[in-house]
Length: 138
Image (cartoon, rainbow, N blue to C red; front, side, top):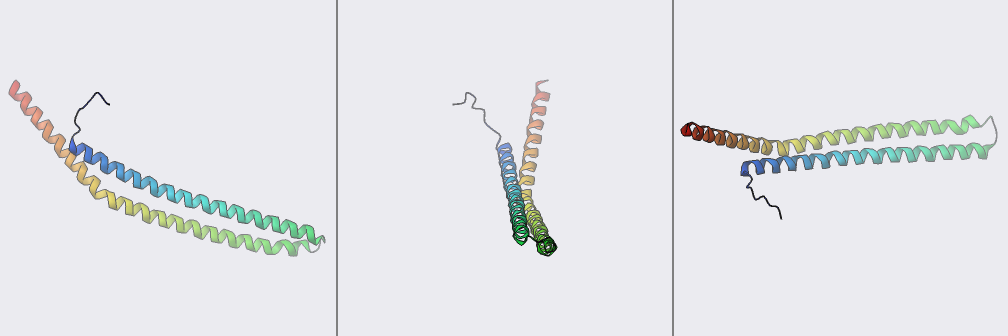
């Protein structure tokens, strides 16, 4: 299919494969964390909207101006509790993300370093061979 059948250096191929695996796992980890934050934001928004609608309905149903403060005041406490729960959930997501990123980095770090060293050794060897061949031709 491709007109070029140039062989790829095995050390380069190995290093690119390890880099690709690292970036793939890293992007999966970050996507998962982002999805968790989005779900938490959506849940908080939905819960706050439901509380606001409930408070509005209670105020309209009550109809007395003096009792409005008693109707709305408990909702402020509920909103505070929801924000506290949200903050804890976001902190939990952030901590889990840090642990997952550290795991991915540790898992792929050694392999990527090893393949990079092998690639550097191969490039050095090829350069030395070419320099020797060039010196012999002159």
